[in-house]
Amino acid sequence: MSNATALVASESPKGARFSTAFDRQPRMARLVRRFVSDFHDELVLGSVCSEGYASPQASRLSMAAHELVENAITHAAEGEASFSIEIGPDPEDPARRYRVEMKTRNRAVPGDHEAIDALLRALRAAADPFDVFLELMASTVKRTDGSGLGLARVWVEAQMDLACLVDGEQLEITARASIVRDSEDTERDPSRGQAPS
Image (tube, rainbow, N blue to C red):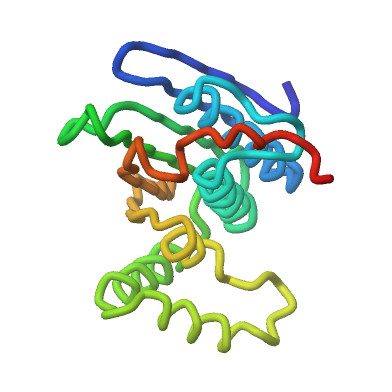
């Protein structure tokens, strides 16, 4: 296939996993974003909201997926990129929490790993990671080749922990979150999915 070279989905009592490999086309970020929203709501809430609507948690996770895939597409040296998502019970508190893990993998552009490591160190060390995000926003305001804010958005706005790994020429970025099941974000609002009046 030219757009998606592999699709793999599996579901078990431990959770569900989906992965895909794709050519580096910008529209893939949009498609993955939409899929993650529905994947989350179907697995966690038991149904998908109507077109154009999603639970608040699905909105945050789909934004994170979009940023991760866009990053993999933009910063890949060449060839395919891949994305995977896994949603399942959190092993530390499976009755109350679930865990989400997303990964992207692509052939690394030289120097990207160091830049990503520096950003992740700054976010981890900050008393308030939002301050790092604001500084990054101010420093990139005049850029014309993208904002450079994607991974910081995943950390700050989606509240996901990030890790970066280099495996040969491959760069893998992992985003993880443990989410409380009974939070407002995962409860279905009876009015959700209805068009505003």
